[in-house]
Image 1 (cartoon, one colour):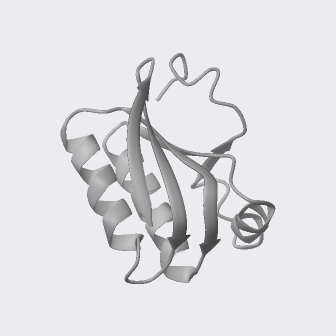
Image 2 (cartoon, helix red, strand yellow):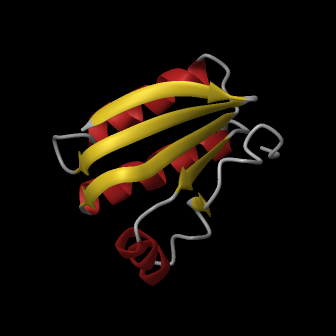
Length: 112
């Protein structure tokens, strides 16, 4: 898994590609988002367009970074997750924890 960072307005976009799985991405994602939150970022968007697979550890990492952000008054949102990932979040009733968006247009104006 690789992560590229860019800024759009007041949001930090993390373009993620590859597989978000145990021992290959879950820890890296937690570390990267944790560092951004510590630096004061209040809006972090995870661009999931190029993510090919998410296992239970990856799902746990997404939930973990979302909760960590909420606890610090920030927000982490998923941009363009696959249908499979959205279905997984829905079945696990995690759409109330992990916010999903389909467009990066309003990212700079979104409220945390």
